[in-house]
Length: 256
Picture 1: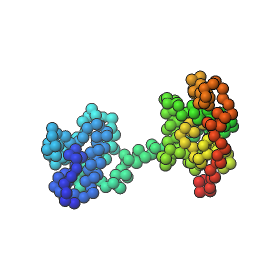
Picture 2: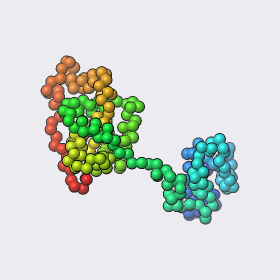
Picture 3: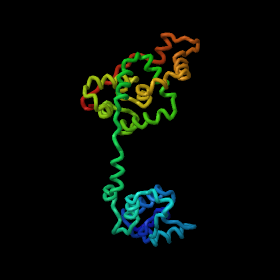
Picture 4: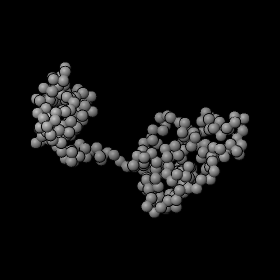
């Protein structure tokens, strides 16, 4: 390539000479990693020209105060990225670096505990009215109490689409091997019969009962069902909120 480009803080020396390859991106990645770990770039100056001159020299360090808690492996990866082109790691080599591999090992797959499973199994026995009320209350709660459940939901939702599929649920509940039992749990939590469990449905099925039973939460749920505000919930009002009997989505063998 012959065209000069880049941001001074992250530009590689070879880009400044208008003779560079894809390896320049790994230099930039090293600079970005440096910033992420300490909060400032490895090369700096009072203006662009001073920054560029610093980049040309290629000298940088790890000031003790900001870097004393950063591992030697992380520093080693940065050194091997902010390096001459012939010594610089490729993207493939970077993924095999010990620091990256150590991070991968810490990303454990979340599983539902026995308590979670018991809660799901109890939830499937609730009547439709109670499930609807719990779902509404769950949608209104925004507290620290949800943080753990939020992390569990995100971990179980492997593809990150905001819904837990039957396959994802089965992988999270390793203690239950019976397909029918897992199907019953799935069907119970899937209140809108979409074939998946969304975040609000997951909260409704797993959140501690003490949270739902707070007077304020119960009163807000009652007001949702009491459409005309007369202090009573009629059959017609229930039909408006809960809806008809939408048929559940059929589960194919592939979804297992």
